[in-house]
Length: 164
Length: 181
Image (cartoon, rainbow over all chains, first blue to last red; front, side):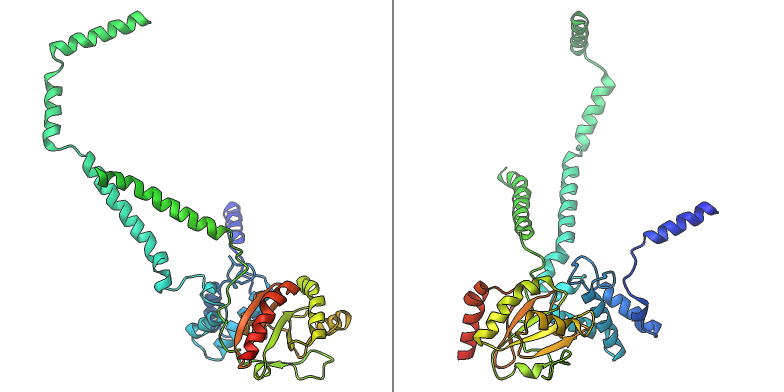
């Protein structure tokens, strides 16, 4: 029991903590949940690989408050994001938008994976032996060694002993 | 046979192109973001004045009518202190009005005290404790300096301390050409 509890606590402590301060949290849980979701997808401009939800930077805090303020004013999630994008560019979105400048980004990986699959398919198909080849091999195995092959084998074995 | 050889060469070529592309990307400074606000009008905003100033603070309407500079600063910002003597010399020449956004001061006295100590180069200064003004200009750090034309359209953004070189080679020529428009 103790061990399980210790494990649970250590796993919980290893989760990334959010930077949202108690004073920032909105009274309405539904709005707060939307705010959290939006800010998790907005890049902090100061420490660029964190979301504003994770970042302790002052600017991130002010952006979190701005998101909440706009939600309280009745804006939709998209409108809030649109405003911040209009100030900082699409760079602030941690999920890149799907448009003509990002087609390579979104389509690239599936296209490469598909090309890889095709390459694998061709490779295995080429290596697979034809039924005629399989039959020929089975025949040789059934017949055993021919007299000539037997002599060659013995010669080789003798030779090896001499070398030793 | 030729087609098979190509099959082996193409991945290598693709790899080389990608490697060069990414290598160039690594040499770029990620903190130098291109502003999306160039050639867009200043967003409507209104900031109160900082303590001890009898001017009215700073609002978007202050940017209509003449070419002006906007400098985002803070008493906490070390690069701003480096930049400050240049801003003071700019004030002496009187070449162009310089407005300021006093960004995120730890307390209401910090900004005014700092300007008292270092000198006050600004025509108008707005107090911006919760980044409203800074976000309106898409500011990511201080100092940042913007050139705004007569119609209130942002024309240029300089990130980091302004130097006499930047002023002489980039910003002043731009101010003159915007004025001539």
